[in-house]
Length: 472
Image (cartoon, rainbow, N blue to C red; front, side, top):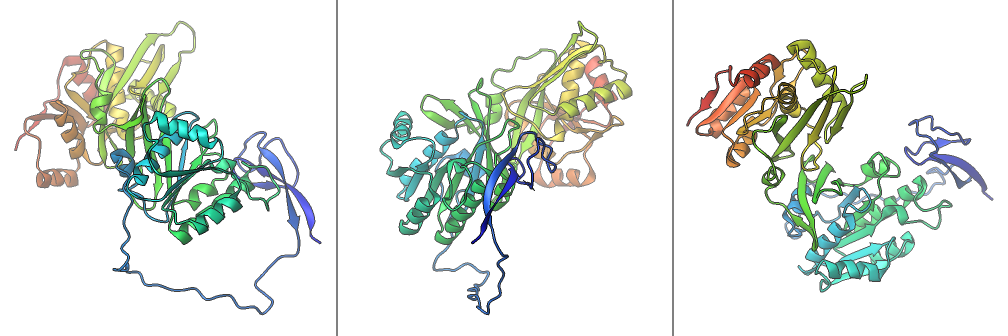
């Protein structure tokens, strides 16, 4: 008879330890080891003389009798993030903070798919069926033919998937599911990995598009083993601040579409509504001729996005000035401040610096360096940045401005919203050739800047650098 063996598994990284410890040796997390009991026995190999069943090999070309069609929900922002719709047999993991709207988003999506005649099943491990019905009634989708169930046993869910012809399945959430053959509590690394592996296997076998809702840790990462993100086809994060009505659906991984794509939603009384033009929404409350404000023309996936960068420089009342950032990287702000002091002679060491990306969006693109530098210089000198200009470019440690990708798309989006000029890095030869092929923007003033000194002079003296006016 096999003997039971107790091991301690880290709930952050999944590392296995023989003895309990306060800190995980693999990832360094504190108080993350939990005891899990497993049966130990002789190693099971492929011996015994029994041959396995040969695999059924198929060709690479798709069958003309059964073409693969994506399932389009009708939510334009949701379909954009998933790569144009759901692929049959895909496994999608959706993570986000508690109360951000993950269940609301998926319920709206499956209701719209069910109204198209698809068989949709919503299984909740956290709520009762009546609670899900109340949410659907509040969203005005109580008439959608979605099948509901409240269950946490993977064996029962697997039997339902095999017996029912299901097109779309929602598991809310994967941390509440458990496999009765595993002797550990639901939510542990072993349970989450085993439950997800079994459900993903059935998803691929039956061709069911499956959504997994995942909890996140205090650091914003999806709770459970990291291997869970490798097992699924698509990883989505639902971001946003509860103080704002905007919600950002971001693609981190997608085997069937582009990554780093975003979809913008607005939370209202009737649930989430898509925002077709997020740039206009983020700039709707922007005030002109305000010091410390600059507009960044960024790219999120294939979509150009304009965001207001706000900076405030104030005298430090104490010895150590504060550096506070919302929506951007703290380390990158420290680098920009150091470059401005060392290369441009602008002193920030005795002042407190506050930086904010307006609208509750988080920017990770290095191209925002130039817009951040413009906002900081404007706040320090007390001179407003020209309200009709946009900024983008990467700043190096020597103060040089480096070119970024897709400048034409950024400038065209800015011209569409009424901007008449931009400060960008000097474009390389390949980008200038591309501009000649794709056409240009009539009358748009472009300042091609090589160094931060030129930006400081431009903002201080009102335009030392001669702009290059683009004409057709």
